[in-house]
Image 1: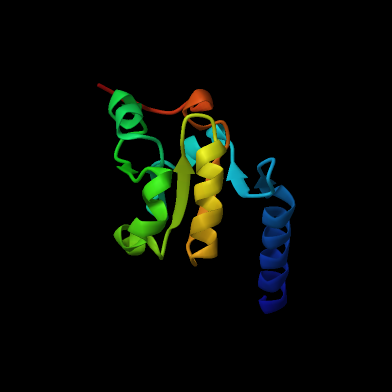
Image 2: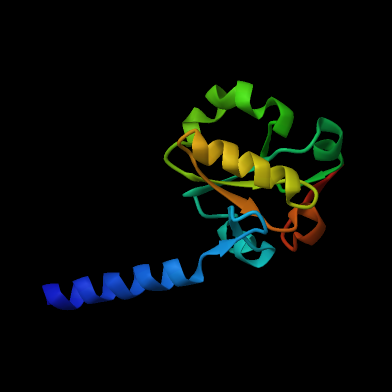
Length: 127
């Protein structure tokens, strides 16, 4: 039974590694469809890195905002998410890609949402 369990874990880990997506800069990323599946998963948290104006107009519900140009100086605000995977989003995925690299380099587990709000197919909160 133990050997069977080890085999199953190996297969699962192999699938995850094989299925891993990266954005055009090689940053860990997920698609909108994958993000929608994770929105209610407590192991993940979404973080908006756009401007306050963009966030106020439309956003993924229940997401914090830290504009990408402020992120490096505000890392202490997201320390509470160290045990979660942070999914970063912006309008198109470019700013959030940079933010993903910054957070991963700072010891967080971060993933870029490919296409950002432009491709988001999940729930939104509009002003």
